[in-house]
Length: 553
Image (cartoon, rainbow, N blue to C red):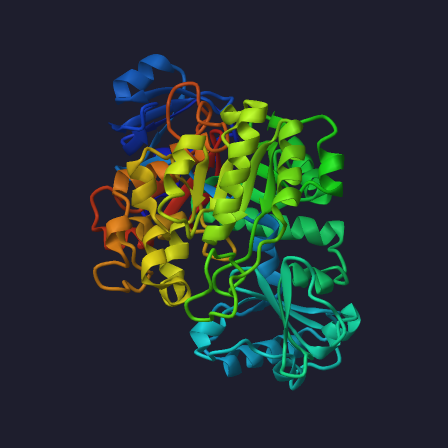
C-alpha cells in the first residue's frame, strides 16, 4: 500500500495481495458517519473477501471480529468513506480527452487558436469537437460567431460545447450540414442566435443544439469504451467511488452492464434514463433496476429537463433577466407536456430527477410534483430537482413539504459568481445557490459537480460548499457566505446524503458493518485543516468494494 515514499515491508507485501482478501487496515486516522449522520472516529477498518465491512473501531475490535486477515498499516493517514457525486455525465467526462480543451483559454483569440491548433494536429478527424468555452470570461459582451471559426477551420464542421453544456458554437460548415439557415425556425425550448437580418450567427441554445447534434456521427463501440475507461480512471483518481450519471441511452446502459459483469466498473454508477422517449421505452421494459452486480450499477431513475442554463440565458425566469429585459429564458415544455413525461416515468415506478435552474423552471416542476406525487402516493421514491439553482423564497419550503431532494452542485455557485447576480438581480439572488436555506428547513442536499461542466474533484466541491470561494480564494470572505455549509454538512452532502438520494444509504455512504468497503486515503485531515486548504487535498488511494482501484504513484 503506497501511502508515502517510505513504505514498510508489511505495506509493500500488501501490494501483491489478491484483489479481494479478508483485510484489516490498521493505524488509520479514520472518519465516518453513523446512520444518524454524526461524525465518528476510528483507527481500524476490517472487511471480508467479498468486500463488505465487518468491523470499524479500534485495532483490538477489528482483530477480534476478523481474526484471520491480512493487515495493512495506514501509517496514520486519513481514511474516509468513498465520496459520491450525485450529478455528473460520465461518458462526456471521457470525451473531453479526445476533443478541443476550451476551459483554459482566457480570450476569444486564444480559444480560436486552440481550435486551429487542434484541427492542424488532427487532420483526419471528420468533426472538430470541443468543450468548455465561456464568453463571460472573455468579456465579449456577446456570443462568439461562426465567422470567427471559419477563419481557421472552414473545410470541416466544428462543434464546441459551452461550459454549461446548454449552448454550442459552430462554424458555417456545421450549420450547412445541419441544414440551418435564415428560414430555420427556433425549435420549442431552443434558440438560434441571429444577426440583425435573421441569419444564424453560429450559436445554438438548448433545444436548438439538437439540430446540429443529430448529424454528428455516433461514437463506435470501441470509441465509447475507450471514453468510459478514461472517465473511470479520472473518477477513481479524485476519490469518487460512486456517481449518479444524469442521463444515459441504451448504448451506454449496454456498456455499463458489460463492465459490471466483468468487474471493470471501478466506480459505482447510479444511472438515470435520459428522457421518456424511445430509449426509455426500451430500457424500462423490465422496470427499474435498483441494483445490479453487487450494487455496482443501478438504473432506477429518469432525467428530464425543465429549462436551460443561466450563463446562456436559457434558464427560465418568472420575470425578465436583469441584464437582458427582452428575455425570460426558455421552458423546454409547456406544463401539460412536462407533466405527461413525469407521469410516464412515475407510472413505470421510476424516481424522477428534473434539471431546473431558473425560478420559473423550478416552479413548474414543483407544481407538477404537487399534482403527481399524491396521485401515485410515491413520495418514497425520493424524487429530485437537479440544480435547484434559482428558486423563489416562497418555493424553497415546498421542497421539504413535497419530499423533493435538492440535488445541488457547490462549485456552480463559485463558478457563476461572476455573472449570476447580473442575470437575476439583488432580490432574486437571495434564493440562488441557497444551501443554508434548504438545510435549515431540514432538506437533505445531494451534492455533486455536474462534471465535466465543473471539475469532478469532490474536494473542490467541499471547498466551495464551506468557503463559498473559488479555487483562487475569490471573493475574500466568500460569496454570500450566509448560505455556506459547515464542514460536517458538506461531508454528509458528498457521502451519506448523496447515497440517500439514490436509495443506497444502507449499502454505501459511510463505513459501517454490512456496507461495502468503499473508502479513500488522503494526504491531509480534512476536519482539522483550514477550510481554504480543502480543495488542495490529494487522494492517495481509492478502494471500491474492498478492492483497490487507484494508487497514487
